Length: 214
Image (cartoon, rainbow, N blue to C red; front, side):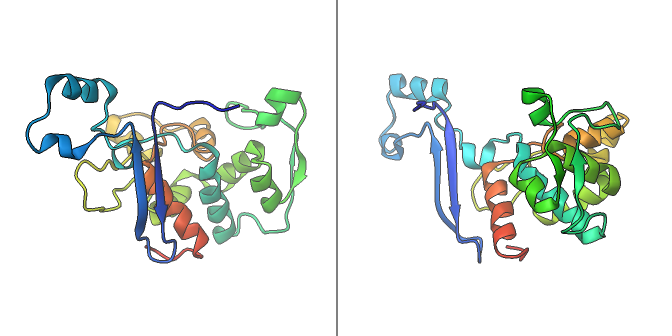
């Protein structure tokens, strides 16, 4: 079913170099209308629709399950998991606030035993809860930082957001206490995690090129 979205962004990169090949933000505007002075009706329309807001670099959004590759890499690189070890998703995770895998919410059963490749394939929350429990949020954030998440990319355009990386550092700034339950939410791309489309494009490019910093 087609859905006519009112807002969105697309960033296309050369994954080997990080070069921006195309970047689109909608709704957009006509730059030439500003040359001789834009009329008030058009200006008001642009303001109302936030057409001058570049969603690709200024907007930040919860990444959701695409963050799970950060968690997976942290688990593999630290030796907390191997490529062959299987974790049995029974549906309800037995630590923290006892969060459930999405499949439990839908069907009231788990994915069963999965290795890390299958866990990514099925987007198994339970598996990555366990990775968060084993590795810890500080280590996971170290890898998130390496991929540039929660940081400006340095693109030469004004208004770029740094986004937000959920973790103890964020909570320390506001005097809050970080609990295991916060970790379990963060490792699947929830909690306070919010990143811009251009950050996500950089992250996916680095995953694709074998981890080379761009």
